[in-house]
Amino acid sequence: MLSDTPTLEEYLAYAADLTARGAAAFTAAADEDALETARIQFLGDKRGELLLLQRALGALPADSRRDAGRAFNDAKTRLTTTHDERQLTVRHATTRAPHLDLTMPARHRWQGAKHPVTVVIDEIVGIFRELGFTVALGPESESEWYNFGALNFPPDHPALDMHDTLYLGEGALLRTHTSPVQVRTLQRYAPPIRILAPGTAFRRDPFDASHAPAFAQIEGLAVDEGISFVDLKATLTHFAQRFFGKTRTRFRPSHFPFTEPSAEMDVECRLCGGAGCSACKGTGWMEILGSGLVHPSVLEAAGVDSERYTGWAFGMGPARIAMLRYDLPDIRLLYDSDMRFLQQVAE
Ligand code: PHE
Image (cartoon, rainbow, N blue to C red; front, side):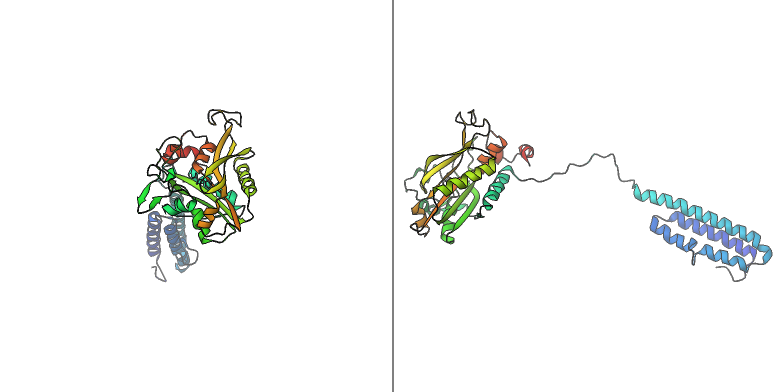
């Protein structure tokens, strides 16, 4: 600190010392914050050291003021230029950090997407939701009774054969279709019932171009008073139009133990538009689902009064539908989980 009545020599020495300290502090400042702290200490306009140096000029004898004033001006110039130069440097350093190499190639970002079978399931569920259907689920390991008995399969039906069904032992098996969810739902809820049951089904099939041992299925069930085949036909036709766009549909008689009458629904071949091609084996039609009026014995097995209530049901394979939509020749593409394939069809 300067004394209250400094000599010229003391003033000059002090000015030189202040300049050296200030310049060193500015140069040492590593970032803008540190530089600002140093600026306030030396160049601050309230209690900055340079300001105090200027005030001390008045305490000098009159004949010293000229030299002292020059020393003060030098100190001021030196400090402000050192500060301003340092400011440019630290600003530059923070905006262009040297460790950021802008020429480096960007890293690939993997983004998840829904599996094509899931996309199809979600869309089917969405269309039926608009009609008042809700989603119901059931177990993948089932009893023989839910999978076959309650669904009116005769005990000697070939589907019960070890050859077709994956048995787990002690009357348990992997469900061969989602139809047991019909029975579970009817047991649990009183009509009116409108449900959709997506899930996995299992069969002892070879894994080939059109069969998978584990595959997606969607079951639909509507039970109420006065339901007839007209409801089935109208609802499934509406679904086909919503899902595939304007298309012709047809119903062919079929057989399932748990529906009577039973019908399979075909849509116009997606590839040839009905003219006939190799994909539809020249028929112009593609089968998309099995359906029928719920057999009275199924209603009774589940404890529903079949005199009062009737219903219809359908079962559909979303992977088959995905094959139509994405024009796939082999169902294994959908169940192999090969990323090269999945990335091509991801929506
Ligand atoms: N469960 C039948 C199957 O797996 C499909 C189906 C369901 C048919 C409901 C009619 C009614 O093939």
